[in-house]
Image (cartoon, rainbow over all chains, first blue to last red; front, side):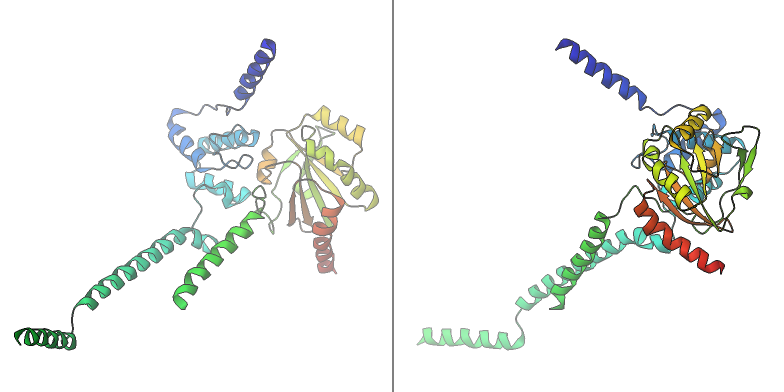
Length: 156
Length: 177
């Protein structure tokens, strides 16, 4: 029993140590841009991780590619374009604005606008209900007549 | 009446989008390379470190470029299908041996048969990046001008060949005549 526990524990520890992304040292002057670029790129293999976090072999290759491009003097734009030319917009965590992604970008605002319009309509309808409670001239006249009638009957 | 129909309609549209999304495979990433020429490269061949192969050497009315490696389990799974395509159907298949060990790869071909016209030896995976490779095996269909016409991510099978590759190849050969 004890031995089995130790085995399982060792197995887990060994396995978790494997899934740490390999660290690539970058010259200090590029470090900030390097970190930023890696956090903008999606790992193609494990799709819910950035290239910075991913232990996948391909992500490691892409980190090396980014580092080398930085050292060759490429701009951030050029590096992101290099990646999307090969892997499509999918590799970018920030999808570019183009016809295919219009809905993605304006969708939330459309939903917000729809919600606001609905809310405004509800508020307006409610305030109309309230104004409806006010008496118009005809009602006023009738009320007056009723009251008069009442007073008249009591007076009798 | 319309007041009730609008939310119902919106609900149906949203449900439609979500429903379609359910059946999409999120691991399939559409390649931006389709319709574009294959990336340029020049590297040694798998069998002969002294011999250089470049993108210009990939020729034929159409050809396949198959990304494979000995460490890739699914590549073993599709290997028999590739051997069949090459020997029985005379399909020209170029190999892109991706991040592999030269000796192990040559051994593999000896052991399981060699369906490849020639193999590009991509030791550090740099050519793979240019091809947008993200998971071996991958298979590209190239036309006579070196334009990528189709890409398969995953295992080649007779069924995939029939359904995905044959129609494209028929298009390519029809365009040539």
